[in-house]
Amino acid sequence: MDGTRRERPPPLDVREAALFLDLDGTIAAIEPQPSDVGPLASRTDLLLRLGERLQGRLAVLTGRTLEEADRILEGSVTAAGAVHGLVRRDPAGVVDASEPSPGIAAARLALQSLADARPGLVLEEKRHSLALHYRHAANSAEGVLDATRRIAEAHGLTLQAGVMVSELRTPGPNKGDALRGLMGQPPFEGFVPVMVGDDLTDEAAFAAAADLGGFGILVGAARPTAARYRLETVAAVLSWLSEGIP
Image (cartoon, rainbow, N blue to C red; front, side, top):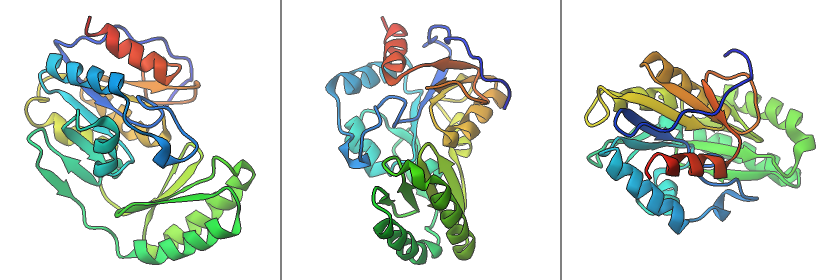
């Protein structure tokens, strides 16, 4: 990662690009609770049109489960890396998933006890990971990070920090691995990867896109990042995507 200053990206070139999109904080606004995020007709229509213009070179890379991503995006994107890359679906709709770590069950009990003891903490349970959100308990950040680090180490899990969330996940592929995997098969192969994301969890995909001759676009406030460009908000991302398919 280098400096924080980033320019607005050039218009999306649908003739050359292979487009990878994070979901929350990138094409869907962050809501008070993860379950509050729902379908949006205008977004679904935009993604369907993008997929058509890109001839299928469109994928979502998200921390959400595959089922949640499909619910929110109304099935408009087939290729996906869900749970940060632990669950992958190729352009033909074939799903390949890592086995959940046996440490998830024990860690769930410890995290639930932590959430019960501190008002404002929200535990999001997934089959392959557990995400402890502290957006509504910002003063608990240090304690949450320390506790989740210890719990991850005790149960052989990978600690993945994000924006106001600490996630314990099954060790295995990340978003960068998911991007590389899709770029190695049709219709993505041979095109220029463009990754758009807002969180620390997107950095691996930014780096992978750059390694493969493409670039990343950071969404939100400036910070050290492997992305080449930056857009300020979800609305700015949707506007930029719309400009690419006049």
